[in-house]
Length: 106
Image 1 (tube, one colour):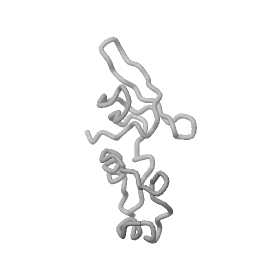
Image 2 (cartoon, one colour):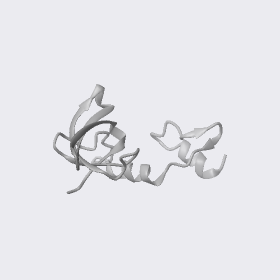
Image 3 (tube, one colour):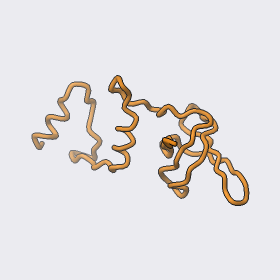
């Protein structure tokens, strides 16, 4: 086991390393950026990113990636959410995984 991986595995608070078999898996930079954006003043990651009804959000994964919408509500125990999109023909509501959203800073 490389020294750096050994140091990470035995850091206080670490319960495991994302891996397959004995090899760690690289985590996409966008995922790391999302996690860093959600670190609160207390050093803990805020899982819901403070998104509430009426907040502008950007879809960050899937076929609607890059499109902005308005957060409507959480669905089924907060794992999926409803987002309103305004498109040329009118408005539509999408049901998406919460992880597919990032709060827009506008």
